[in-house]
Image (cartoon, rainbow, N blue to C red; front, side):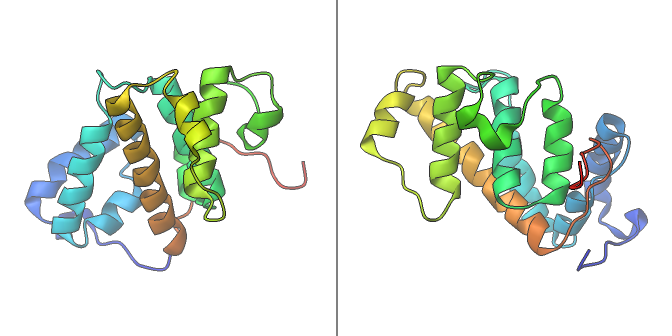
Length: 178
């Protein structure tokens, strides 16, 4: 990592319940949380934004949410994000990097992945045709929520990638030799 984290006791006391909850959920405190927490006001803003995107009544199913976050993480070369998001996506089989060649993804999922790619790759654009396809599956509020999730994951994976946050061993990934 390019920036060191502090010892847990060196972070403000009001962030420690969040770290405790993360330890309970993942078995450890996540390194990106410790990096964001170096600037508590940024940490609070990111935590609030993430919390508003990750809720049970979302128009985006948990499976689709995991698929989106894995795909954005792959495009942005975020080792940590691919690790933790693949772990969350592990119930599904297949190579998401080749989603457009796979029979594992239905038309709804393919449309969402096409949207993910159009937003995340800087040489692509969202077209009216793609927006019409999205409207088959989402109302306007759902499209806003979907776009926010993709944008958040782009921010998160670019943050982690720039600071060289390593994986934390959630999901064993095949080596490049395999």
